[in-house]
Image 1: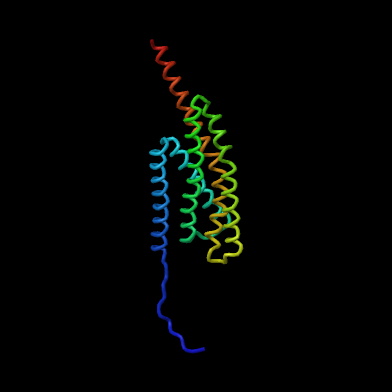
Image 2: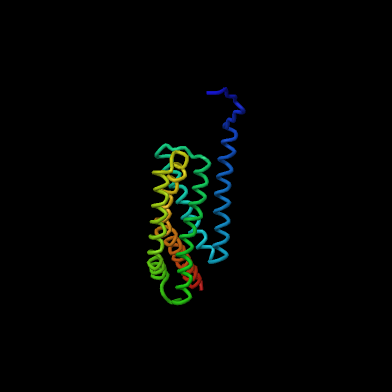
Length: 196
């Protein structure tokens, strides 16, 4: 072999690593905040809060899996987490959009039944979309090599958890909030009648 020379050496120290970590946290929080504003504007703020809680759950569980399996969170993993935020939020918006359509068509139906029907109407779409995405990211995890392994692992976990949270966390939060608000209104009315 011919002679070689070292042209440069780059080292990422703890200060730069800390800065990258803080920037990743800020980017994720900013994305969640912007989505909350968008959904509150497009639907109602309760739907936005429910969607953000579900997405926060997805990111939290995915990072938890990285901790359980002792995997390093690199920059491409942060990109995967932001991708997961968008993917899960889109899935949640599809269900909430169907809820809004059903509210316009059948306004007198109880919210519990309306949410249940809306989730069932979009379930096939959610399963197909999540299933195909899961197969794609699983292939990336198996055959993509070490460079893509962290990115693919985050998406493999995130797609499964995101599908779960869209159905079993976001919609029940909306239902719980509405029932709590109705109970609170009835309690205030009953107390006002008692004073009269």
